[in-house]
Image (cartoon, rainbow, N blue to C red; front, side, top):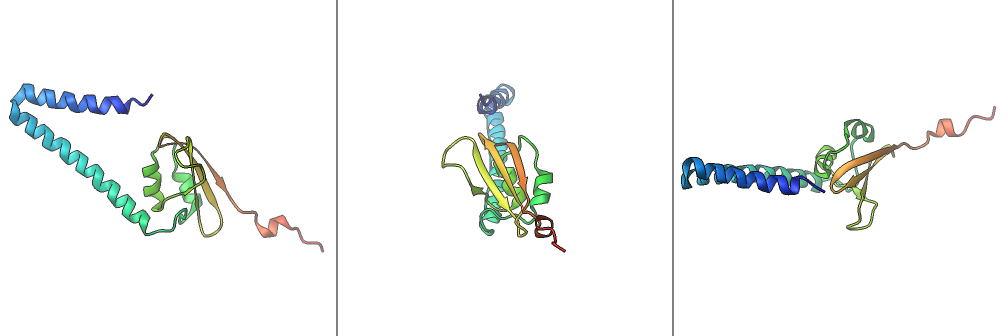
Length: 139
């Protein structure tokens, strides 16, 4: 059960009720203005992330190694898209849980991330086999 689904609306109602008790309609107007500003800030961040991601190829990242280092369990998909500045290549079915995405760099290394309900639960880095190590010389 996602606690944020219930906690945030209850918090908003509590703020509006507290503003009403303290200052009446003027307090509700101030609180509503503050809540609207908070909503607009989040919307602006979302649009900025999506705008940056729209200018990049799907599933591409500058460095898969650096992405692997920066990932932490529990971060949102939007946070990972902001880190990579690109949408991930979807590996799971549309609407299926968990969602699986992959980001690949120019060297062929990739990070495959699994998201459950929009939160990162696990990730795995894949590196291509080095041709020098895979085929030993036959001298």
